[in-house]
Image: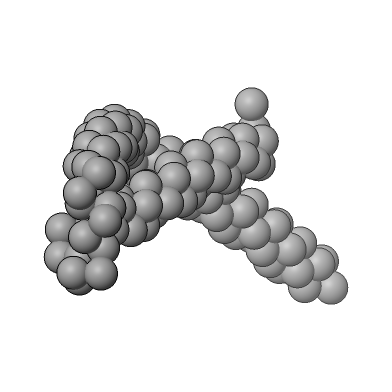
Length: 133
């Protein structure tokens, strides 16, 4: 495999890794927004004005708070799973990024070597040509 192919392959793997990380981060953000929203609803329910007395009398607030608590627990568990996946994925992404940077550096060095070889060949030809005159 030549260095250009290695560079292309490492770039593709990096882009795939970047998409995975982006997807996971977006999912994490959505969960955090929903958790914050439910926490706000919980605090609003617990500090309801006296006008909501009818709801309290029939136990509607208790049922609502139970549902909020259950939903918050589920979302927090999902967030914990996402955070665990995120740590693993970020470690893999750093490794993929390192391989990409190394492949780019090696390809750049190879181009530099080829350029030096061409320049040396041209210089040798100029010297040979000038000596023949």
